[in-house]
Image 1: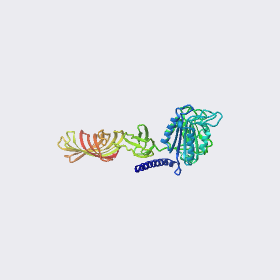
Image 2: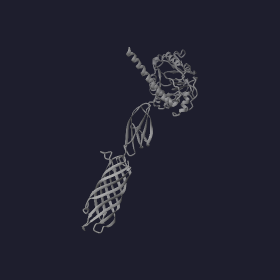
Image 3: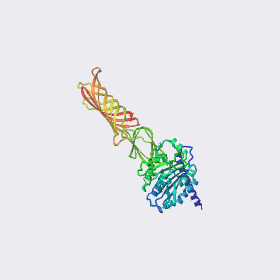
Image 4: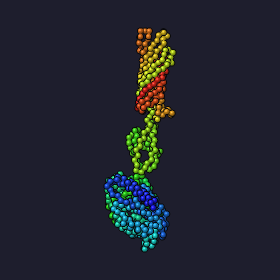
Amino acid sequence: MKSLYISIYLVFLISLLSASETERGLASVVKQLDSNLSLGTQYLLIIGIGQYLHWPVLQHPARDAREIREILETRYFIDKTIELYDQEATKRNIIKELNALKSTLTPEDSLMIFYAGHGYSQEGNSSAYWMAADAGLDKVEKKNWISSYELMDSLTAMEASHICLLVDACFSGAFLNTSREEIPIPDPSNIPYFRKAYQLTSRQVITSGAMESVPDVSEFAQQLKMALKKNNTAFLDPLTLYDQVRLGIYKTLPLCGPLKEAGHQEGAAFLLFLKDRLGVIKITTSEKGLLTIDSQQNKFSEAGEWLLQNLEEGEHQLNLITPDGREAMATITVKPGEIINLSLTPPRPAIPAWNLGFSLAGGFPLHANIAGPSLAADINGAFTVYRQKDYSLAVQTGFSASYDSLNSSYGFTNHLLFIGPELGVTGYWVPMFAKENLASGTLGTGLGFTGNLYDNFEDQWYLTPTPYVLADIQWQLKITEFFLISIKSTYLGIFYRDFYNKLFFGLSFGFGKY
């Protein structure tokens, strides 16, 4: 007995939580419309009849009705559904359900009715009829026929603030007052319109045709299903739904308008509230780039914060590719009504936009007259002028200096001090095996000056203009985001009386913007 009580309690608790979650979801949607709105129960009555006792069998109405019911329950807030299909949909059962709704509905409630099946109208008679599953064939007796007047009387007596009929049957135009003038379709973002329209009493109908026959294979049902599936607006009213449905119907003339003498107030609207099944991703990125969503949707984004809206529930792959080819990727699982904060930050480029450096190096001569080791120093700046993902070209400028001692054929020693501005081209590239580090090579030239100090001529000093060329290769090791240390090898060739070749090895210290 104890386990029975526990089971009953758990069932009750699960039902309560489910209802509470539905209430919270619908409340969040309605809050966008009016925070003070008192919202009741959303009812749906589905009637689909293909199997008749006396009338010709129809292949599609029951199937269409079930599919429309599934779409409505899946995508929109429906609290209670009543279904009557084929042999269940007798006149007795239909009237019974209408009477039950009449006694159940409150002024805060809404009711949508979908009917698919046979319809009939006699020539010269403004009334039309729904044919219940047990409807007779006798046009005088009209046994188990449901007239439009009977239906409208029943609907008028209901206390619900909003009622909408979707009628897929022959001669269904008899249910409404309508003109065939162009209907102004509301803007989905016009919240004041929907707020005002939902405060009034609505009695609306959308029909598959006017006073005419409609085919068994229903264009109306197909377009209705498509429109209900594709809608992504929070509030869907009959005018907007009708505008989407009618564009795909060619064999009949669908209509939309207020129900005849049913108490519809001008400007009122029935509303379907979309379940928040779509997600939103709030993306923050420090760089502009091309965003690819699931390898299909492309959107060019500037740096900053922006919203990616109306994403279907489920997993999505996002890629952000910068103009220089760097890529940031993320896999996000979107949940209904959830706003996901995502930072897409491409890896910082290994290639600098600019770089300033200072180096010291020691070397050895490649010329016979140079007596001992050489020393060199330089300060330079490189400014990138062309950049791709893994390589770039930069203009480099700076100053180079070197010192050497030369053995003269006369037996004395010359001290050569060279200094000169340089101008060159530097190429940077990112090795495949070391993405976080960088290699570079420079070719440069310039016109400097060489000072020559002769030991045995009373320290006489000569200053001579000297052209030169240089080439260096560096392996740059990033220490921080802005600071790096490079291991470098430099070749320096000086045209001073003779051509002096020197090769240096040393360290360079630099910083820059990457």
